[in-house]
Length: 350
Image (cartoon, rainbow, N blue to C red; front, side, top):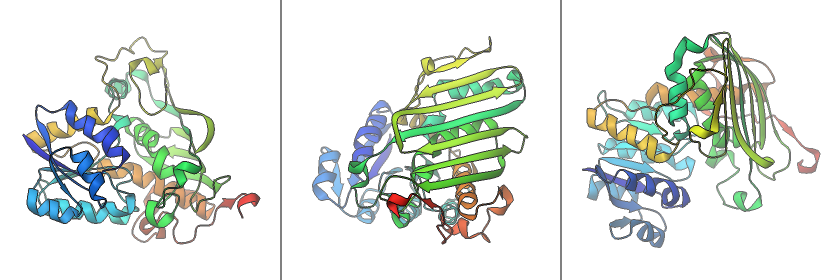
């Protein structure tokens, strides 16, 4: 049995990570929980060991796998500590506040593990797997639409760490839209250039509540990317136009095969695994058993963070940004706002 521990006993741990562990109870068991609020840790632990200090948990329990469910600004140090204790890490997105932090985590991984994998569960359902497996059978990739139009109101932003650059790294782009962006990138490949805008139109927060981008991929394909927390009718929408077929996905926070459609007679996903924490965790456990790097780790886990970094860089500088510009010489490599944070703010919020 793989011995797992959870750091951070909030809603995402209770509603997504614990059920995912239970779905794989034949090969992984929860042995400990840590949270700064002791009562919350004990409640989620439900009989297993509970701690208020993650360091004490790592020293006492020596888990094989650590699930990090804390606010984003705590991830990098907690992840490095867990890797240093020999544990694999599965970390909620955004795994870090910047590419610089992500690269620190990669440096802390061993050549044969332990590894950190990012929670990008929407990439791993049967529909997405089937789309990628079709490869060139649908013709050249030409156009993508990637829309995350969600709604987050006053209650959501009442949580002290939310809506702040220092504790979340960015706004809706890196926190919400990144799921659809990661799925898009897994289908269309690496991007070459981004032209973007971002703004704070309605929410009284520091970070953006809307962003939009035009993207050119290395293949020459193009995409339109829209992310919002201001949309009363919520939807997650992806459209992929290939030379021979269109494939579409409409859902909200997760999908099954019924949420996909295609003009291609080749469209027939085998099985019907949902896009879920349980599905991605299963793949991580498979990789652990083989001693191989899991999906959404290393360069594969870095890709979406690099993309949103380019988006912010374009939005804040007001110019196109090439992928090769996102390197340690760029201020956006170190902070998603580049230390300048110059974007549109509606008159009502200024």
